[in-house]
Amino acid sequence: MIKKRLLSLVKGSQDYIYKNVWMQWLALLTNIAMMSMIALLIQRVYDGLLTSVMVMQALGVFVVLLVMRGYFIRKSVVYSDLSSRQVKKTLRQMIFEKLGKLGKSYDEQVATSEVVQVAVEGVDQLETYFGMYVPQFIYALLAPLTLFVYLSFVDFKSALILFVCVPLIPLSIMAVQKFAKKLLAKYWGQYTKMGDSFLENLEGLTTLKIYGADEFKNEEMNVEAENFRKVTMRVLVMQLNSISVMDLVAYGGAALGIYMAVNNLANGVVNLYGAILIILLSADFFLPMRTLGSYFHIAMNGMAASDKIFRLLDLEEREEVNPVPFPSDSSIKVEHVNFAYEESRQILKDVNMEFPQGNFTAIVGLSGSGKSTVAGLLDGRLRNYEGLITVGGVDLQTIEEASLMEHILYIGFGSYLFKGTVRENLLMANANLSDEEMYAALEKVNLKDFILEQGGLDMVLLEKAGNLSGGQAQRLALARALLKDVDLYIFDEATSNIDAESEADIMKVIEELASRKTVVMITHRLVNATNADCVYVMQDGRVVECGNVSTLTKVDGPFSALWKSQMEMENYGKENSHE
Image (cartoon, rainbow, N blue to C red):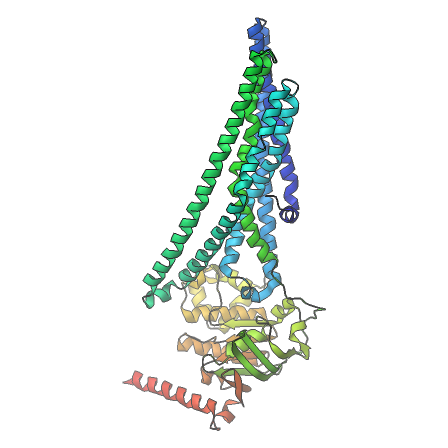
């Protein structure tokens, strides 16, 4: 029940654990002293030797010991809290550092919901494990030994019987450990599964409502919740049964010790002082181990949680062998690249593209043609491709991921805006930005006047910028991107699902940016690619055409067919709007 790896991971908490045990042991010694004093007073009363002076002296010493015991117990609680805090801080930092090492593609190996559950509930379980179980484990071994050594001078046989009965409690724990381990592994598996479904359904609640699928998902969640309830009840039954067994052993052992003391007193083996002292301290042999047993489910939960945490911490990281920084030449070349999310389904097939430095390149095609997959490859989110992608002649796979993130910026149609102020969201691009620089960026995206009307940079944004329209949110995300000032900008459907005015504003900024930076734009709206230096047309994971819009529209090919279709749709919409 004690994992060496866990202890080695949180070395900062070990000092607090030992201090906790030390305080509990000192509290035990003061309790032994108080019980010895009570037994001595009873002996003096029996012998008729007790005086008022003795009573006053004993009372004074008893009060001092009681205060000391209270102090030691309080300090043990303080050290328990400090070790718990240290564990939470250390483990969560390790989890976040691990996610940083896994990089942008972490979700290819572990679900976000599992990361959240491990970092919150899993760490909380280990907080209790280190703050309560581990120190109690050490103290439960130390306390019976201390009592045995002390009481063996009073009545060796009674002390030996009490000491021998103590291991029956951990033996009863071990009897259910194998079953409990499997049960708690199932508990955590069901817990993470339900959490995954809950997070997904919560994020897609609006969509579920629109399509009337919320009732189906509700029933599905009810089934998962019922399965989780059943396994939880099985865990509780297991805990209750184990506690009942431990109570039987603990109090049965204490009763046996008391019987032996009384029997020895009757046979003249021990005096009244010794018998009373054994009676008063017999329960203390078992209570530490009994308390440890009550923490058993905490320990097992901690073990199950640690398995999840170790699984996350042991995920294979992208090995950077002699990584190099991002080159000064930001031109990108894609040569004979193949990529598949699943082995049975090829997404990209022998793709060849070039993105010269300072050029404006567009990638177009129908949905599912592989456009966004190319974007994921260019910014380093997607790995394990076949072929070669180079930046300035340097293999993309050899460039430091941190350097990639500093020089390549991906802006999708759902770029995340955080709850807080406009200022806080913009400062993510550069913590040293001045108000003037932020307002200049807002002005470029035609958002400055609106922000000023709403209170300026201190305007509060709701979660996911829920108090902005889709177009305003996308323009704010674009302003943040402009403030980042990187070498390569990748816009993935940056004008999708927004109003015509916002689309025009965003395209104006993108085209201006393309005059001084390398810009790759993925779009289903061909008209947005009108001023691109080069347009790649994708179909079924392949590049089927390339050239500028003027050239491609004159050729009877996929681009020309899409162009005519979209123009007809737009003209039809305009004609209907005038009627």
